[in-house]
Image: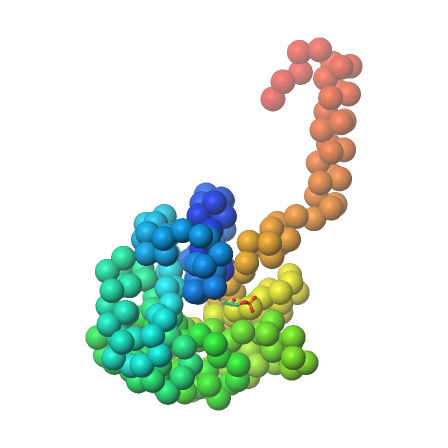
Length: 221
Ligand code: G3P
């Protein structure tokens, strides 16, 4: 399963990119608005830092304008995936962009039927928002199970990108179900790295090593 970072923050993007643990980036207008920076410059910078796919979202809601924005976003780099909302005009834009060979990520997906239609239109990725479904008392992971099964049954090439991830168990379950990608906010990715037994274990190893050095002069590794 691939891991994308769901962020437009350059510090986090550089930090996790340097660790080699992220395969790509997803952004959206809300994430860009949090950075208080010129969004076009920020998007260009992100695309140049990260080698893998970077999802950049259109803000238009009509097909023609969405396609124009998609063309402009793709000029930022060949790794740009154009994020398109799951609305009727969006599906038309996806169809057109797919014919042009431009990869798309259909966002704001909340049901398996929406994912099925996005795949039929030619989407490269679908982004079901599981946390927002959980928030309203529906089972986000169940929607992922349904989509993965339907895509497998009919051999759709569209990848399932789990979005709106709220906690580490969402990641484990997405992997068990067989989702292609999870996109994680920096705070969730940090939770995946840390474990208290790792920190306690390291503290104890270092303490014992110091003791050994005191008792055995000139010990080095
Ligand atoms: O990429 C967008 C998606 O992950 C949204 O997450 O936390 O705003 O529901 P959230």
